[in-house]
Image (cartoon, rainbow, N blue to C red; front, side):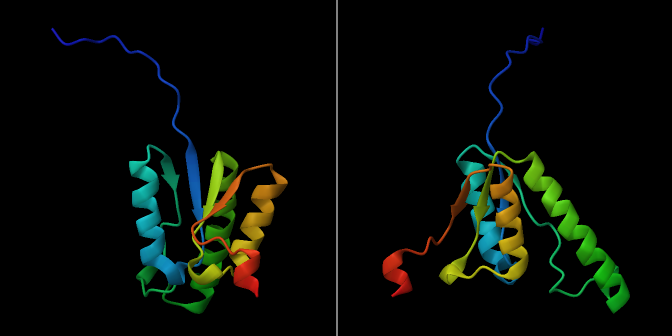
Length: 121
């Protein structure tokens, strides 16, 4: 007879990935590393930079972009922390807005490519 007892365990940390979808492959790689570290990963799941029938037309693309931006903020609400995927230290306007939002909620923010004072020159 199978064991039907369930021992509750602590919920793993939930991390949301933020960053430009121009770094789609780096976002996917960060998801692999975070998942294998035992974290639950929330991430962008649509890349509006790549053609798709759901956002083929400009009016549709604008609506989907606004909806995705709002949905990503809700993912930040759900997350315990934020990981910014920022190759070369690049952070665009949308990602900056997401970072500011996360910080306003008191969420810890980590970076895949932190920029130091030495890097700034």
